[in-house]
Structures are given as structure tokens and as C-alpha cells.
Amino acid sequence: MQAWEKFLLVQESALGKDVVDSWLRSLKVVRFDACNLYLEATDSFQALWFEEHIRPKLKHSLFNHNQTPIKVHLTIGTAQLPFRKKGTGRKQQSDDAPSLPPFTLTFDHPDPLATLENFVVSENNELAHRLLSELCQSAVGFSAEKSSVQLGTYNPIFLYGDSGCGKTHLLAAVMHSLLKNDQRVIYARAETFTDHVVHAIRAGEMHLFRQAYRNTDVLIIDDVHVFARKSATQEELFHTFNTLHMAGKQIILSSHLPPSELQHIEPRLTSRFEWGIVVEVGNLSPKELRQLIVNKSDALKFPLNPRIVDYLLETFRSSPKALIKALEALILRSHLSHASQAHISSTAISVNQARLYLTDLTKSEHDAMLTPEKILKHIAEHFGIKVDDILGKSQSRECSLPRQLAAFLCRDLLKLPYKKIGDLLGRDHSTVMTSIKQIQKQNESNNEKIIAPLKAIQTILKTRSCTVPTERVSEEILS
Image (cartoon, rainbow, N blue to C red; front, side, top):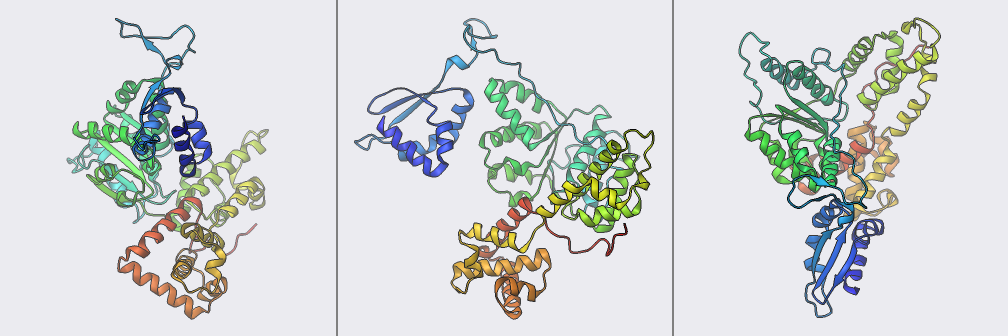
């Protein structure tokens, strides 16, 4: 059918050839006439994708030679699906259909060592820690006086903060605390929730998915920003949220950003995220990061020489996650290296040995560090120009604004001297100072033309790169 093929070619420019080949050209054309097209999907997941992403485009893009809209009828191929025998409620497989594995939901198991007691409390995360601690205490009747924070008092509780600030630790600690006291708790990363939706749709078992997620006392979902652009998942989350909220069941969520700044999440969801209480979880200071390492190594029964702690803090500065990953790798590789010894003296490990054990992670850390070149690259990509345009002499708005943002971010994120920023951009330091002040002024006056691209670029830099801390942990490491 020529009209359908033309429609597919148009979609290739918007979605890409690979997507069109995988999701649209694989649809079987059953039959067609002047005003109707009958298609057959291979499974319910492909059909759902079609309804979400393609159906809205048809009335504007699919016409016959008389410019009359063509109506598309979509069915699902029976060869791939279980069917119901007439008069029974049990699903049976057709003789020639492949057998489907039983539908199951496998949930995440967060760090068992994460507790509210060993969480490093600072002025940047004290409110979140106190709120969740009181929630757990009231749920088990621990506090002598009745707590003002009961399950469902603040619903939902929405935590946000940079990656590695401790959100997952807090969520895991809440889960462990409540499970010990016979509360029904579901903890799921956003990726896991999405996988469960997809598998339930494919298996035709959405009732089992809903039964699992909507029959709990507490639902905890980590990193809800991952739901961006996932329409089917957001739809299920919306109804799951409503069901639990109406029943007075506690919902706890986390994200990199506050609800108001989430991108590509439906407004009806972000508004619900703000119904309860939104709490920021701030980053730890160098001193608090040291305490984090000490707590973690003690919990793993592997206390470290202070010089090794210094080395880890100085080398893995991109994020607490990188720091903890390096610590765990060091402990594991030390055990493997000394497998023949009955006891390992962790305090006897030298800095040179630690460097040798962590060579690969050190290289990854170096590659992940945010640099002026990465800032320029991401700004150029955002505005659809070349880095050379930013560094060039053009004073047009298309080049001057990205240049000013580059100066501002190099100063704000990397704390580079004005002269060094000027050398990078080919400008003198006074021009750089003026550019930075202009961005600061526009940002403070809530100029949306500045705030929108600035926030978008900052989000990209957070998710794709790692910033360099403004404080050095120690000036010298002794080997």
C-alpha cells in the first residue's frame, strides 16, 4: 500500500530507520481498501507501542490519493498469544504456539548494611534523615511519645538530590526497618518497575502486576526521573499511586531533581509528587565523606589505614558512588590477592598496593571528570552549533549566549580563574567577568530564556559527567 509506505518514510526522518524497521515495518499488512488499513502486530507490547507513539500521528499523516484519512485497524497475531478456551477462565496454549514461562516479579534487594543508624548525617540531609527516622519509629511504636510523622502523614515523601548524596541509602534503611516489624514493603528501582510493566503487558498478566504493587503498606520507588518518555509505565504508576494514596498507604519516591524540574514526566504525576512533602538531600562535605568511608569499611569489617582513606578521597572525587565503588573493589581485590592467608591486616595495605588494585577504576575516574572541553561540547550540542562557533569571533546571539554560558559554567562548576577561562574562550579576563555577571543577573531575575538552557545543560552535565570538587581533601598523599 503506497500511502502506508509513504507514511513509514516520513516516520523514518522523525524516529530513525532502525525504529521504523523494528516496530512498524514488522507489522503485517493483512488487507486494505481505499479508506481502511488492517495491520497485525506480533504481540501486545508492539500493539501498545503503536497505540502510544503512532496512533496520534495517523489522522494528520495517513491519507489516500483523494486526501481522505485512512483508518487503521490493529489486531494481535494469535500465533504468539495464549488464548482462552470458550466457557473457561483459564488460559491455554494453542498446539503450535511456544509455551510461555510463568509470569513472576523479581524485586530489588538494596544494600543490607544500609541503616538509619550508620547514615552520615549532615546539615544538608538532616531533615530527610529525621523525617524517615520518625516515620519508622512511629510505625513500630518505638518512640515514647506519639510521633507527628505517621505512615501516610506526608504522602508521598519525595527525596531529591545529586547522584550519590545518600537517597538510596535512606530508602534501603526505611525498607529494612519496616520489614523487620511486619510491614508490607515494596522497594523497586524505576528500571525494575518499568521492566515489570513491560513483562506484564507481554505476558498479558497486568492483573498480577497490579495485585503485587497495590497490595502493600509502603511503596518505595528509587530514581523516578528514569520514567521520562515512558508513557505506559507512567500510566501504571499514576493508577498505582492513586490506589495506594486513597487507601492511606505510604509512598516514598526519590529523584535527581525536584518534581517541578522533572522533564518528560506527565504533569498529573509531577503534581501528585508534590502532594506530600518534598525534601532535598544535599551532598556531603569532605569531612563527612571521610566518615562515610570509615563507616562503610567498619561495617564490612575491613578498617583502613588513614593514609588509604586519604588516597581514596583524593583520587575518587567525582561522586560518593565512585568512592564507595572503589572502597568495595579495594576490599574484594585485597581478599583475592591474599586468599592463601588466614587473616588479612587491612591496615597493612600500602598506598602503592591500593593504586595497583584500583588501576582500572582510577582510569575510569579520570575519564569521567568534568573538563572545560566537555562543557563546551555539551553546550554546542544543546544549541546545535559547533565548538568553533563558541570560540570564534562572532557576536551574534546564536554564538554569544552559548559563550557566556560556557564562561559561567566553567566558573561555577570548575572554579577556574577568570584568566584561564579567557584563555579557553579567546577573550580577556574582563570580558569573561562581564559575561559571568550577565548570566548571574539574568538567572537571578528569572529570565526564562537563560534559565531554561542553563538548567538543561546542567542536567546533562550531571548525568553524563562528574564535577570536580571545589575543596581538596588533602594536599599530599604519603606512600
